[in-house]
Length: 244
Picture (cartoon, rainbow, N blue to C red):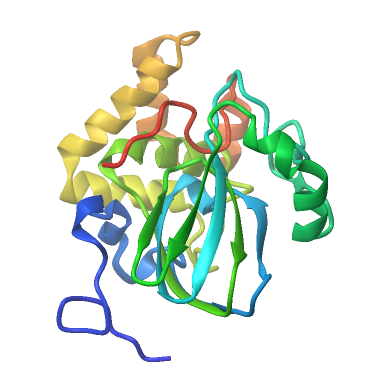
């Protein structure tokens, strides 16, 4: 499907979300755009978006029910969702109807729960790290795109550097997505990169800040990162979410 993106193309990203920092990668960026078509009662079980990215979802036809939960160190996954210790594997009931029948009522009472219906012509924002389940209430068509806003740059840097076994969507010839992203950000947005690294340092209260920041800047070999790693992070963002 040859669909161009931009104001002279088939569609463009909503400007309210700001610049997508993965754009610095050009044609080396990971997969990010999808046209989603599904019948009534189809959808997706609970998941977080890849590489700690944020996302927007625009409904072109039909309507979708969304239920979402933020991520924080003190809050477990949504009811009925179970994750491995490093959160690399996610299990939940076998089907969306099974989850709705068994856990929906409990989930709606869970602190932080957000739910709603996105109708034709409406756009929904999924912040970095938020759990979400989606159900098509009728035959639906939507466009969705993952992006990296300035507000969640630190989340993506963390993920690429320290969850590299979970990184997805990059071409096979790109051996080190973290190193590539840092290099391109240093060329295009050195100030934002500095802020993102500083954000990580502030979040890591148990490590010496200058040493931590230096390791993030110079470590490019994944094997070396494994040997040097003495800390762990959550899957995606753990702070209060905000639209950039």
